[in-house]
Image 1 (cartoon, rainbow, N blue to C red):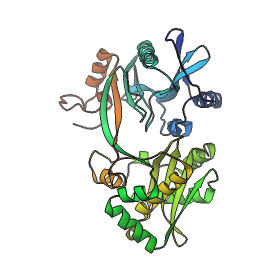
Image 2: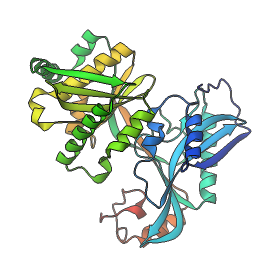
Image 3: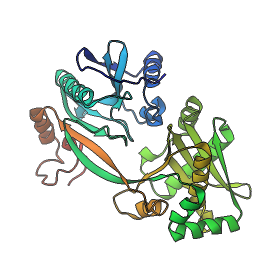
Image 4: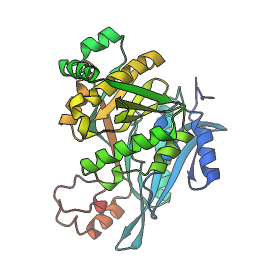
Length: 364
């Protein structure tokens, strides 16, 4: 049952930090998560990907008596140089859209108090800096560090079919017509995703990443997808596009109460000429309309204004974009400078855009 706050006083609020390492820890986190507005990006299977031995997955929860008001997962990272622990730590949010999630009806005073308590906890635990990837629900408000607009994202309203079709750029309409003439068909699975479909999706996705020479953090093993989908059947869907009986394009969707989030996908390049990507997205919009969703979130490009962004924007040229913000905070300036001066890549650096600078692993 979701917590809804009509009036909350700031007094008697307590902040606790808990690990997310044991089954018991995860059970408690999942129980708390159910009390907040539904956001599939906070599922434990998404948070825990990519852990190394110097990182510990944890979460903050702010409570008023027995009522959770704020929940925020994070990585507590020990800072090492040349294999030795420096005695300093830093914080990073999990990959993707994260930061704090607030109970429905929370007011500004709760957010302000949350960040005040978090900063006190950081000082007690020798946390030098914090890097946060905020979500799309404006949870960056009242952040006590630097808020940086980082990437423009495409998110469009699900409209009546005729209006949606008219709003597409002509290229989208033409490509969809071509897909239909080529005999493409779609299948969208939700709550009953079979292992066969997960295997097909994984193969297409992996081949796409290999073709693009993606870095290692974009590769996921098959069990990662199985665990994510089987443990979260209500918030995961897969759309498959077939040419005859051959899967040619696929996308994993993450579902909130109102929004379909495009998460990961790929296409067999042997079938590019049939325009399966455009076909897939139009088919998702049909499904979204049927199921009563309000938004289809496509995300952004690799950088603002690139070809990937413009490809996505062609589906929603009349909708306002949403901005992805990151947060950067230095808690211990002296410690931060000590660490930066210990990193040979930082010596003489005048660019300094990487954050935290002491974790930079290449010359500016």
